[in-house]
Amino acid sequence: MMEALLVSNIILWIVVIALSLLVLALARQVGILHERVAPAGALLPTTGPKVGELTTAMELRTLSGSQLTIGGTGASTRATFILFISPTCPVCKALVPTAKALINSEKSRMQLIFASDGADTDRELTQHKSYINDLKISDYPYIISQQLGMSYEVSKLPFAVLIGSDGILKSKGLVNTREHMESLIESMDSGVATLQEYVERANATGSAESKDTVRNYNPKTVEHTR
Image 1: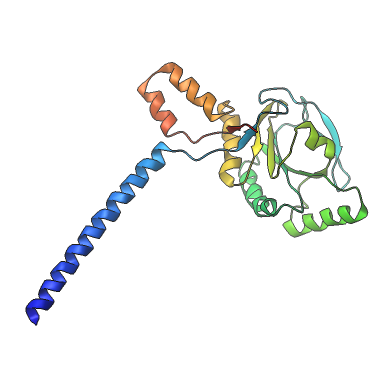
Image 2 (image 1 turned 90 degrees about the vertical axis):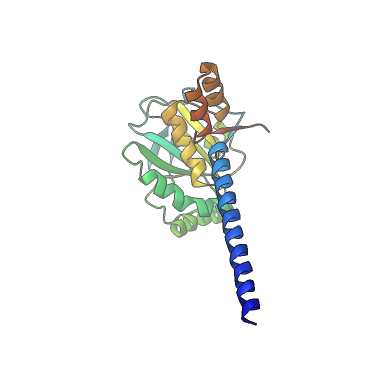
């Protein structure tokens, strides 16, 4: 009886050790894949104003009644991060707190503006006001402008546009996560609009160092063709 128990314990330990080695091997493979496959950035539409172009200055009024200039030269001393949202967009509601936290960490050089449309009736206007209170964004400029959305050809939400302090469109794209929004900021800092463009630049040099950089690159906006 004791011999049988001893044998079963030995077999059990062998199985446990084998499974542990298997888990370690799988973890190593996951780590390798994580290094080789970088997360996708924000989806960059192929239509609308192009990244790198000077934006057109637009005089708009916030929901609170203050006048605001978006785009163009001299409009702001800081970059402008515009997040297009809607009261009927559930993803937008979940993303707003993340956007606030992200841009707050960049507040020395960047301002956050929320934009929407669809306030043709008193009922819709009331809905927007309740939306602002629910999300606790009354301290941020909130613009209801169909013209603004059309000028950047916003067709899906949530959508973000990043304009530099010089009025140049630095990046834009469909954003669903913090990583997507971070990719827009990284795109502005690096001057690279898309991951494809980054890969082309690295391949042009042909150096091993550049290839390693591409593999470990935290991508900017990934071009999205409709």
